[in-house]
Amino acid sequence: MTASFTIGFPYVADRFGGSTASSLVLAQALREAGHRVHILTHGTGGRVTEEAATLGLPVTRLPPLSGTPSYARPDRFRLEQLLAFRHARGAIAGLGLDIVHANDITTLRCWTAPSLAGRAALIAHWRSNYSDSWSVKTGLRIAARVIAISRYSLDQLPAWVREKAVVEYNAFLPPNTGIERHVAMTAVRRTLNIPPDAALVGAFGNLVARKRTHILADILRDVSHTADGRPVFGVACGARAEPYDVELDRKIAEYGLEGRLARPGFVRPVENWMAACDVVLAPAIREPFGRTAIEALALGVPVAVSSDAGVCELIRDGKTGLLCDPHDIPAWIVATRRLLNDRDAAQAMVRSAAQMAMRLAPERHAARISAIYEDIGRVGRAA
Figure 1 (cartoon, rainbow, N blue to C red):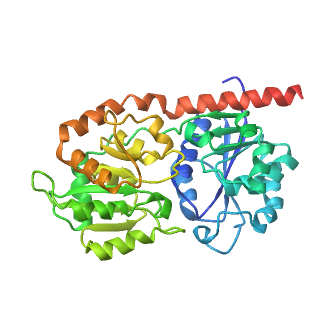
Figure 2: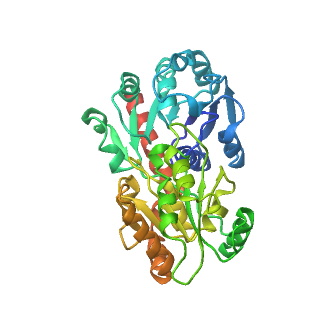
Figure 3: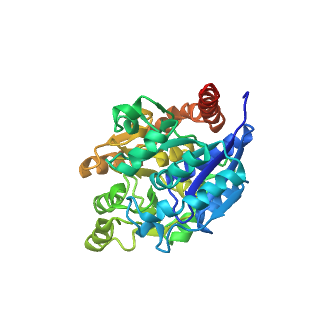
């Protein structure tokens, strides 16, 4: 690295998802690469602050955007985003930010005008689905560069955005090598009060309708035991968020799964819960990437993944995982049975996926993002 920058990563304090986790991995890697990184949170407390502290990243707290919990607020332009201007502009000046690295639509809307006024380069790290919105288009026009997390995500953007966009897949921290799967399996089954020999099928992520976690209930209704007689249970780990997956509750009640499908909410450390599973599912629709599939594979757990996701650009069907149409419930049942009953084939998929780890290493990701910063810096100096 030939140049270092002072970079602000803004967040809403009480909102956390896979995109947040990915961006914090990047922030830590950039700091280790020699950049000066600041985490900026609208609001106090929250998981963003906790995770930043765990990674040793400094946090600057700004006033909350609203008194309404984040997950209860619609994903659209709101006046509160403009009212955050003074505090955001003050943080840019006070911290001497060269770059504002926005990782979601809310922070893009909040920080576009302050970045322009404070002469900080705005990076729009595009981790969302695109919908036509004047406020989002304004942010994307002002952004010095747009970074899409998959070709799937990039292809949704207007042509004029794609001209200044690049694709960079999310980086992943290497799994905790101290995790022993048999220990995690025993501990989680004890926590859930299920038989120690039970097979466990997991889904991870906020319980919003788009994630389609309710497919887990359809699977459990049909798959009660593995071929070797083990009882099959499920666990849906994630916070309740709007729009909530109401089908999950309905199907649990209708199928009589209250004792077989647990919903422990947000779990930590999530790696232990993933490692405890025999299979991890990712059945979302319109998924810009889908990091849980890669996390599970890194922990040695086979996966079945929605074909409507950016992560499919990395996972080869039948080789490193199984791909299913998100709406084809019989296909999910067949895939889950296959991964539970043919352990040799399932583990062969996991081993084949190991080569992805090097490509998605945080230090390599940070080096490529640093090159983008330097290119922006050269353009700025030339101007």
